Length: 82
Length: 82
Image (cartoon, rainbow over all chains, first blue to last red; front, top):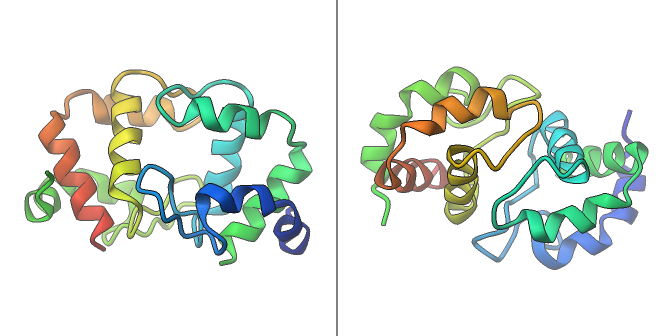
């Protein structure tokens, strides 16, 4: 399972687009705060696997590419806890 | 621009997975309430264009397939207003 505390540490790079507390200031970037952890994991894994296209994929694919399954679980646990 | 009232009417079919008020009861399905409207539009258009793969695409692609741009704008306006 994901560790929200570890996820918080790993989420520093996410804040630039998704906001310091998971609420984005930029219309194109989704809020992550309070989102379903399982959905966040599936989304990150889809970006990692290159299964997502569209405008945001060009940005998100490289972000997700180097994440381990544990990183993904931790990040999902963290953002869903906000 | 999207019309939230029209979006509410069109959102009946979405409630089954995303919850009556845009907060899903099912871990795999994302909450939509309060999400960024532009992001919701981009996501629906990506599903409509078949640009998204992964677990949820099989469910969402047919849902999005018959939506017009106005439907998409209205749904995005509605859910982002919750």
